[in-house]
Length: 115
Image (cartoon, rainbow, N blue to C red; front, side, top):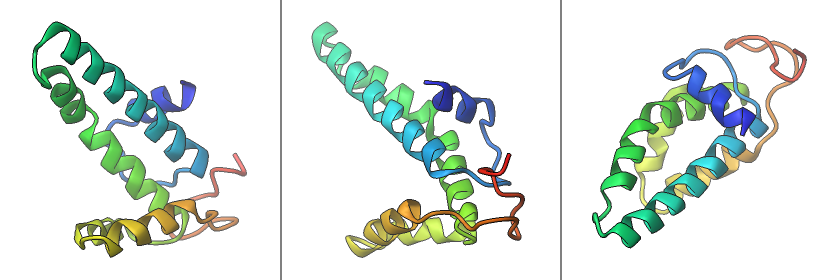
């Protein structure tokens, strides 16, 4: 939960680097929150209103942590546009997100693991 809150504190910070743990924990808690809100929407019969509001609220932090994760692997945030290519793009991004970040400092900042 701490990782999720840390990402929300950096709401639209696209600069810097994000460790794998930061990215995957944010993603995990976002998926859990989406599932819970989907169930709540179904129970109270409001269609996907709560889920849509949540998705809209975490859109920018999701983009920011994804860009910072790519920065950690020494790739520009523009690589995120690769996700627009059907089938192949998301798979390539998944592989990039799973790679270990570059050790020491890279062009996007200091190693977050070292801190």
